[in-house]
Image (cartoon, rainbow, N blue to C red; front, side, top):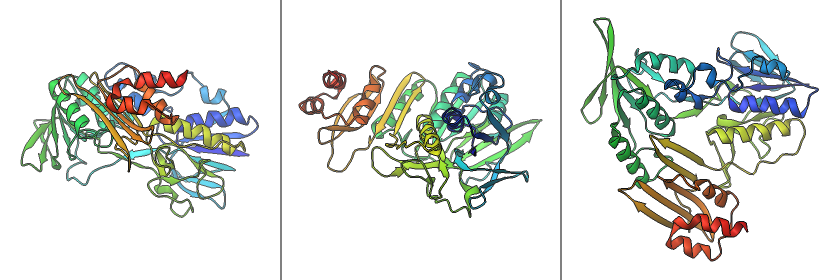
Length: 415
């Protein structure tokens, strides 16, 4: 019996380790497509700022970890899957047989249809190699343009600021963090960034990037649709991600936004499972199926999928939309159905000058979503109230009048 895990990010590594622990008798093969030991993309910003070296990004830091665990690690990119034969083909021409297959191939950054994004000096910030290239250019005083102001972009933003660059952020949506924050929160984060010396342009598109190589030092010009042009030594593209599923053509595996899985994380093909950023799994808030490209969901998926692969019955109750971000000291949080639901109610408190904001979304006497900005105490309690579907009773009226009392509601229902 051979279990093959494709993808060596957090989801793949946790899955391989779970498989090995759950069934010591089988072969476990982990396939990664980068010439690095398995590492965490979430650690790359710390590498950019020098807080960790490259080894600090590695998911497992003990030499020989995978050999010790009895996990065979292969480097290669999967080109196709033959479900009938139980075989994955790699781009180098080799292949690997499997009894059961778990796909943890994650996602890749989207390249917007903008002329010039293939120019020297334009990079994503997704891999360790990307980070090495950025470090070579993003020196103190360098002009840097960051395309995008979503969750990943804002993590990169902070790392670039710590490197001392002159940073301009360009976001085509009307606010920063458009998939995590409403207009109030997004505008508050924008003002915070500007207060910290970052130039932010929202509702603006990059139309072209031009490169010239004068006097041996290449430089870039970034054209915007408002008619202005930004000089740049470096352009970083962080305009979203898409699930890595292209190699599944002809496999019979159903793919929409990601690989469609059931509540055991199995795909439409028996014996093939998916987890992490490439999986379109059960959504706790909506009752539907969504891709939640966050590391906690990826790790939860991995454990559940691995247990089901070895024959245990491990249903997955669904992932919760959950984002926690620290933008140069301003902490923002979104949980669950933060945009509200049909027939729902809302309670809001705003302190514009103090950069504090709290929004609770209710359905009946349950909190179903929340936004928090500028608060660091007890924000995890909001997640608990939502995920546990805590019935509020009389606390519903109290929180509608003053949402800041959510901790008291949580304590009262915990007794």
